[in-house]
Image (cartoon, rainbow, N blue to C red; front, side, top):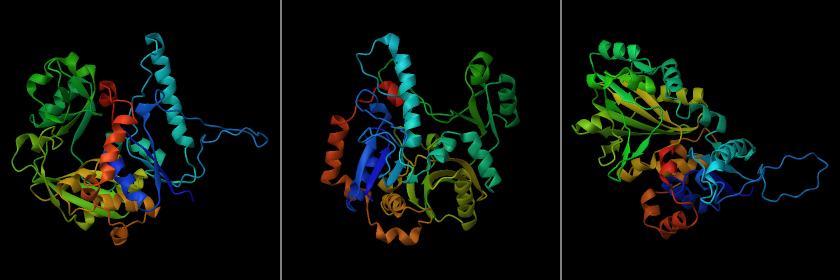
Length: 371
């Protein structure tokens, strides 16, 4: 085996930097693939030939000698050359995006994938499908309406007496007149926001019954290993609506997930074909758990950053190197890697330097469409 990991992600991704640092300790080299760098700063080739061809396209895909592929964050926007004529940009963008998608499907047929490409793409931002799967696997889900029909939206709002949350299918970021960025998070719906049917019809949203909560739980699953964390808003109204706040964080502490809920989460993972994912759950005042979504991209290292006793990096590295969906908590001692050690290492400083030197700068367009 060549001991190589390919990670598909965005420039500056600390998750990928930490994993690269840890697997290097096991003699594994990491190659980054960033959609945002392509085609302006990266070149790729896919060679499909008959058996009699003698052409040698060294380095072309498929890569038969790659051992591990980790799909961390694909992104949505390619990086086009700045000097490209404006009249050609849409064509080059479309062709580059189609090529990159096909490239992933031929990338490394013999490698261990976290997550399998088909499963990643099927689950990716497919919140409605996830809700159906979770419900079938025994988890409670909130009453949900996805719609751009003003009549249905207003009816849903009245049926739940105005206690309704609206959230986008995909995160979006605006550049305000003040020069600051503004991201759209989950928010409570007001009666005034529903007055203009043209606005409601212009774009579909996900509307859900607002659920009273004791706290939320983030559950990161790595094969069979489960790490659960209690996210407590501590009475903060904004965090209680959506803990993904740009300037505030909930408190994070270890949480023992009930066995029944744990088994339901594993059933969801199996149904979606995922080996790694992060669940968002609400715990109601009566103690019942409610499923919101599962993030197949694995936004999870922040849990260890806020609560160092949670072995998130160890679990992530272990799942990749173990090459098996049967990776469990019993295997964790083999991979004693801590995020704090990476953040204080010379490797982290080198990672920051490479982010600036080896990748195209993140434009607003790239941020808007990032996972």
